[in-house]
Length: 253
Image (cartoon, rainbow, N blue to C red; front, side, top):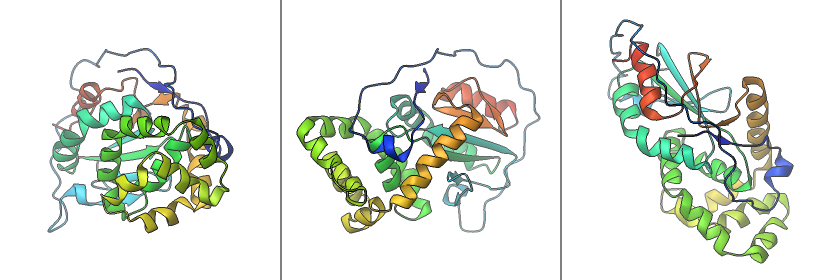
């Protein structure tokens, strides 16, 4: 799977008219590191009455972390909600990553949104509109519906897109969300239209998300999505089989 390239984003560029074409992709990396280097790590029991997948925390980097906060193996993914390769990874990895690796208490999984366009920004705001525990399910379902959002927004036509983007900043998010079918989609998943409108009107949070995306992307040299970091080291692989192999090498087996 190739990395999806993206440009740095500010709130100004995020609010530019929709550009839904695919960005250029980087080279494919099919080479897994050979051999297991770490001893198997013992499983860690979750808090009483919970699974580790129920433990979700917002991190200082504005990511959402699932699992044991003291897990010895910490996996971070930088992903864009409008990146097809990120949607592919979500489809392939979610169940096993959650139910095998995070559930063991040996691995925590943090998702940090890399915002690359206006549609991405508003989807990101909506996945964060409910309780932290709803974030990962909403994100996975957003990835699964990604193509439908693209099609709905494109089918609305240029005039409707321009009309939505001509709204003042505090109203623009809701206009774009309605244009792309987001509000109905999230309403069916527990985020009421009134709640969505409030979240989308929060331009301060939108600015914070855009700024965090830019700052972390530049500091960590995140050049495409998905990009993965394990225990502070950036990986050269971005498919689930190869990421899984890295987790197993470190003892998650």
